[in-house]
Length: 303
Image (tube, rainbow, N blue to C red; front, side, top):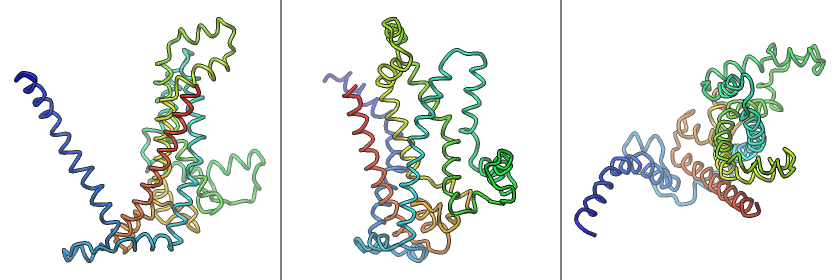
């Protein structure tokens, strides 16, 4: 390597250095230190008295294994994954529809995206009004004779419906985001391929299933991965809809809400236990990511 090439390479690394420093300070160090805290006893007392964390090995994980509230949170987080296939199928189907040149199509694309840019606090106010016992949903169901006219059910206060009501808000809020990603993926598919298939007599369904879906595998993988990770880490919706209580009979209590409450909620401030719980959530997210990659890679190979 001559001097000019060496100087060019060094100048490239100099440009990358600020981003690398930020990555280490704000991402790598917190992750490593948080992982270390998961194996220690570290509370607000340690923090206030400037005492270092005390190494306790796997004690925090034993505590979690015997904590019914944490197990409820993990089960609810796993159950929350049910929103992923519904979200992906609906987003892909609508993306195919709005990808066409139709009258007022720009309006519909924007309308579907509005929930994405709606703040979670505003969404909470709106959906709380819809789910209220005197809200729009009950009014509509009673009008269609699908609910007893004398019923005063509040969807967020019933342990049988609160979880699903919050999950639907996640669906409503994420739908437009994945639709835009799918639209971007659809526009990378050469029109000549689909046109050639139609000329050969392929039906719209065959064109979609045999050409569109296989070529959309990278986008489907990305959307599936993002929505899976979002579902397993759900927190904001539960916090704003239940004021951090976890809902009636802990029916909406999730694993990340457990981490939040052990760290900042209540009087626990048990950072060691919260870090251990965070590690468990991270391990579950990692396993689900690997499964996503494996499933869609095999799907691409079959296609």
